[in-house]
Image (cartoon, rainbow, N blue to C red; front, side, top):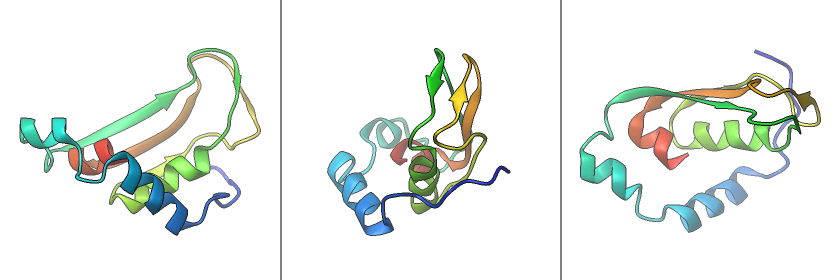
Length: 97
């Protein structure tokens, strides 16, 4: 795990974003009946970029019940195909996050 700064947004602000985006859960996950299945999600840079918001994304996954870790800190440059973050948990938690 790499050292990162704490998220800029407080947990209550992240909860507000989740409530706005998925107030009733993820319809696709529920309709497929896969909410309890375990999984992993990984986010990679598609193009050269300056990384931003990784800490908030990690915390958002954690608030949804997944285990998440950053692989690069916000403010760093990332080449294409750089792993930014990874999360593990139930499909319901991953899709909500």
